[in-house]
Amino acid sequence: MNLEQKIESVLFWKGEPVSMRKLRDILKVEENEITEGVIRLKENLANRGIVLVEKNDEIMLGTAPELSKLFEDLQKEELNKELSKSSLETLSIVLYKNGVARSEIDYIRGVNSSFILRALSIRGLVEKITDPEDSRRYIYKPTFELLSFMGIKNVEELPDYAEVNNSIKTEIVRLNEEIKKENEGN
Image 1 (cartoon, rainbow, N blue to C red):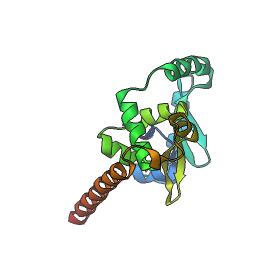
Image 2 (cartoon, one colour; image 1 turned 90 degrees about the vertical axis):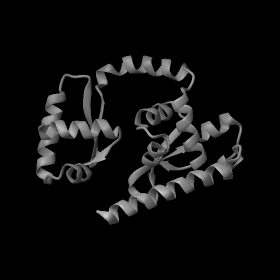
Image 3 (cartoon, rainbow, N blue to C red; image 1 turned 180 degrees about the horizontal axis):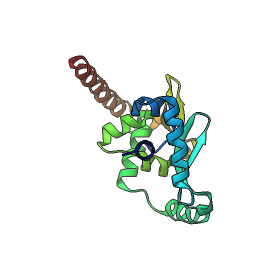
Image 4 (spheres, helix red, strand yellow; image 1 turned 135 degrees about the vertical axis):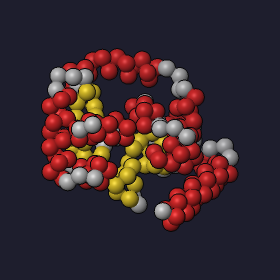
């Protein structure tokens, strides 16, 4: 498998912007190799439905601008649908955590939540912001529109908020301890 295929695979799997440095670290190659791989990937994606979106030092896969009408229609249809069980599950985690990384959501749910988070974001239910504790990652928070729609002023008004939030925190602390033990054993 060549470098541009690896870059494309990482971007697809991540489902969010990835910095060039992060790609270099993941793929264990030099900066110039990543740059060349990205250029080749852009060329390979020319005249296809997927494009490489670039902003500052980050890149991600996106849909071709000429397909915007198709996705506008799909988005309207999606916005009018009821939320799926997995969307409600993810939304509950975001609400009760009130600021949670995708990796934590994935751990709690046991599956990759990228596409669900993107759909919830498109619907205006969650927002993605830079983590104030680590500028290299994002956290997801409920939007003001969601809180307003639910008729609450803040997340603390959610049913059993303190109990559920503490349960989630305990589970994440346990996960971090497991990871730390694994890393020490290696």
